[in-house]
Amino acid sequence: MRRVAAIAVGAVALLALTAPAQAQARKPYDHQDPYRSGCGNSARVVKTAKINSRANGEVGTIKLMWSGKCQTNWVEVRTATSARGTISLYTADGRSDSFRFKAGNGGRHWGDMLWAKDMCAWGSTSVQWGGGNGGQNGQGTTGKACR
Image 1 (cartoon, one colour):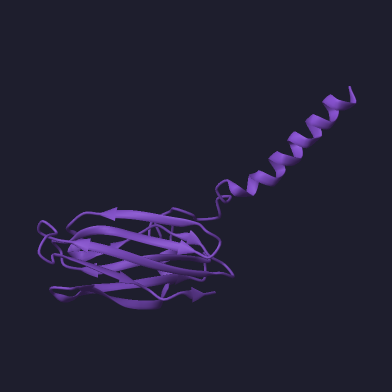
Image 2 (cartoon, rainbow, N blue to C red):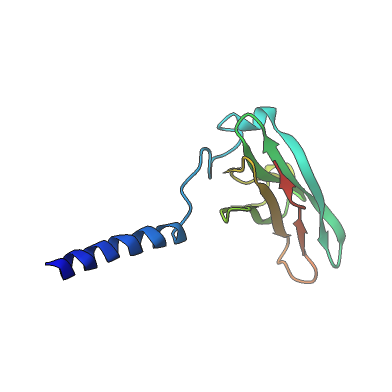
């Protein structure tokens, strides 16, 4: 009986130790649209960078946004209306969000938010237009912003 109890206690301890290895607990506003939630109404730009193409030079801008009201970050991109791509956001505690956008919307696109109170966050994007061949693509990455 003691052996069964010891095995059960060991299994519970092992589960407790491995739980943090699973996905981080969802934080307030994670993976929500900043403008539908109202968080975008009081946002400000905290980092910007160029989106560059080897063949075409600068093809847009990437901005890391911050909402003090919601304690969240997200990434916004301005590029050619014909461009499509991916917007990614990362937080220092290992969470991330990725958003694929299609051509249109006047070239303005944004990803979903991640809660980032008291930690660093940064973003990246990759864009392409036409077939994406012959230099019809670009990348950009913001610096880290810590709030």
